[in-house]
Image (cartoon, rainbow, N blue to C red; front, side, top):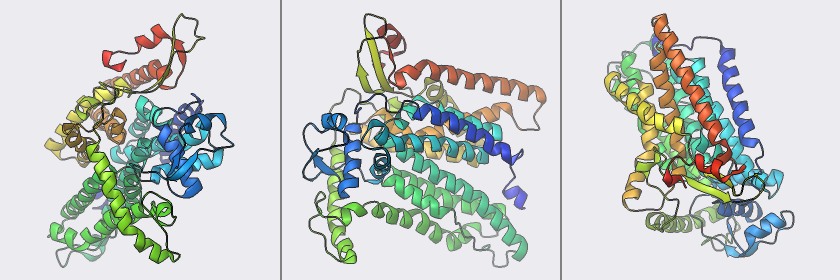
Length: 501
């Protein structure tokens, strides 16, 4: 029964690590190479680099003087950028605390404030490779998933910029990996307990889901970076309960649904929801225990009193944040709508200048936040294939891939219909699930080990050709992803759609 509930992963365990580690090393080189270039404060770094440094200095976001960006670049070791009072912020502090780690290690330089984003972007490649390996039971497909993520343009740009979205993606992916591991571990434990004790009461045995604890920590941190993490808590929380019901039914438990509710619903709720809330509040500790933050007021000397004193004010702060997010409708030249994201209709220019030195009359230098078209456009088809696969065969891998994608995409339609200002890089948390859909589709194309050799050879050739196409596509766009100086004509040749300019 255990082998049926949790089939093993064929192939060498060593190769299960070698491939993912190699693509992670490749991703790290791409993300850390010339990380301080351009030496400028690009796009929303104007907020997050300074807010993160303020967390180090004060424990909360602080107002800055008018020319703070200029001072930051001219005098990084002798900063006098602070004005009076705490500043109102639109997002919780977790991602900014992580950015602050790089600033504390390497100073207030472009490398310093981008370091943590590059690190978590690199590690996300390893996590996706390993979780895809576990889902597909294939070392090759797991490594392919990591490589595709490493080769995505938007993943590269957000990993080389001090903004929050790559951190949301990382913690969502880490939480997802934990629940996938928990699925394997808990099913194996369930099979073992039933084999040992039987199913006398018809409910099945109690099974502790230890991996849901780190899942709750990760998803709570994702939400403490941006509130979009809430959608994943809801989606994955329901998924865990459905998986528990399915595992008990597959194990032959006579009352699988009652057993799942009796033994697993409450622990899962505590791990996935309550622990996420505790984690979320913990990331606000700097604001809670320091006076001077926006709306905080005086802080009691007793930490317990200070905490309970802060809660009503923190709630009021969140009401103001919610009002900001639900009423933000100012026009922005790079705004886009969620129904346009997958076709990459309107990417975001993080940085653009026309310098000299390229050997042409007019030169261009840009950091364009855009996904690799060979990944994004193909994922539209593969997501439809995977959704159909789930509808026909109810394969759990297809279902969770579609769920993770929809949890990051569908909620934005409500805000889009209300004309809330939004950008393409808000789709960053969806990206691992888009890559998973491609890898699952490639697995269907290649077929199982028992498939006819001709099919596997043909499928492998198509899959290999596709990966090479992605590599070539990424290489072609690489100069406009990383701020290389090039002729205007070369830059313009990469603007495939008029809306990209």
